[in-house]
Structure formats: structure tokens, C-alpha cells
Amino acid sequence: MNYTYKQIWLINFPVMMSILMEQLINITDAVFLGHVGEIELGASAIAGIYYLAIYMLGFGFSIGLQVMVARRNGEQDYKETGKTFFQGLFFLLGLAIFLYLLIHTVSPFILKKLIVSSDIYRAVILYLDWRSFGLLFSFPFLAIRSFLVGITHTKALSWAAAIAVLINIPLNFYLIFTRELGISGAAIASSLAEMGSFMMLSFYMWIRLDKEKYGLRPVYNGNLLIKVLKLSIWSMLHAFISVAPCIVKKYFQNERDTEGLFKKQSYVLFRKQYSGID
Image 1 (tube, one colour):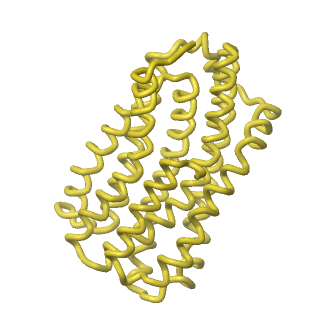
Image 2: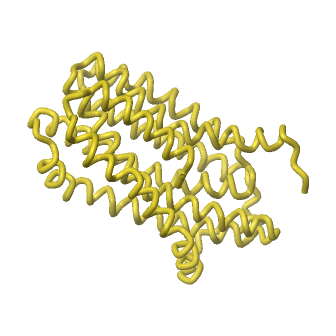
Image 3: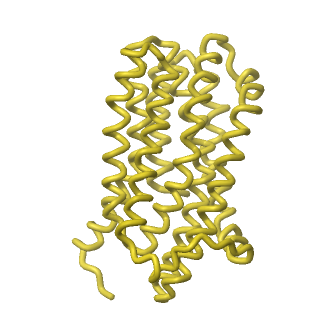
């Protein structure tokens, strides 16, 4: 099949918007928290890049999942696309739960060693306590995004991105200023925004896609999961390693430079998420 430039643009624009979504959520948090205080702004930037490094593990896996789904779709083996999707979904759900628990149990000890200011440390932990909840929605979202991109049904991704931003902005204002939850309110708003975009994509898949054609039945296949994991493991590691050193080298050495943190966070969010694995 020959694609025109217009068709390629129509397929890729929603993908670009869905990748930009995570950046917009973090930037929105920073904009609102900048009106709360310098400590909250700096803490949100540090916690945001820490969360990004963890998020990149799921993002890296989703790249391999997307490749395998697209291959099956190109072979017109449509039922295998659904089977492949569910293996990726199962893995990302398990990984999200594991990382969520890891953030709550291990991260306080790691961050305590890296952050000098006790005020910023407490604010970072407050943010991550609620922000980590978003992993339970953002990782399954990545699985659905990989499936939709693989079968070239990408229109819904721009809707999901719009919903996330529309949820995040008013909730940030309400929770931070009206409810006076401060940095915790920003984290709650971001997690709820990710939940909203995930629910929207799930609803789209359930209503609009041909479940019989694509084999959308939740069946576990260990051998297929291993194949997906073998393909994805290197993109996972590369995506994580490309972000993780920035945390230690740049961010925690300059934790009071909130303006610099914000600029660096925005740059890393866009470069890593848009390029995927460079």
C-alpha cells in the first residue's frame, strides 16, 4: 500500500500529540507550583525527572511492543496483533505495580542520600507518593498506544492527549489553590489526567475496534511474551540509562536552581519521549 504525505501526517500527528502529553502534564504542574513557592517548584522538577526515568522503562518496552504489533499487522495476521498486545499489557501492568511499590519503599532512601535540603526532600516525597499512582494508568496507556500505532488507528491518541490536558489544568487549580493541597494536589491532578486518557483509549478500543478481527481476548502466552521482552529489553535499558545519569549528575547537584531544573526537565521530556530511544 502506498501512503501519501497527507496520510502519513494524519497517522503521525496523533502519535506526536500523545508523546507530548506527558511533557504538557509536567510543565503544567511546574507552572502552577511556581505560584506556590520556590521549594515546591524545585521539588516538582526533581520529582518529575525522577518519575520520567522510571516512566522510560515502560516507554522503552512499548517501542518493542509497537514494532511487533506493526509486523503482525503488516503480515495481515490481525489476530496475532491482539495476542501480542495483551502480552505487552500484562507485562506493563505487572511492571507498573512493581515500580509503584518500589517508589514507595526504596525511593525515600535513595533520594535522602541525593537531596541535601530537607524541605525539598519532603516535597519530592509528597509529590512522588501521589504521582507514582499514575504509573498504574500510564503504562497500560503505553500498551494501548503501541497497539493503535501498530495497526495505524492513531486518531484517538490526539483525543486522549487533549483529555489529559483538559483534566490536568482545572484540577491543578482546584487542588493546589482551592483545596490548598500544594505539591500533593499537582501530583494528584497529573495522575488523574493519566487515568482519564487511559480510560478514553480503553473505551475507544472497546467501542470502535473489531475485537474478533484483531483477536482482542485477554489470553496469556508465555512464549509470545518472551519474544516481546527479548525485542524490548534493550530499548528499555537504553531509554532508562539515557535519562538516569541526568538525575545524579545535573539535577541533584543543582537542586535549588529551580529555573535551571525546569528548563532541563522540559528539554529531557521532549527529547527522550519524542525520539524514544535516540
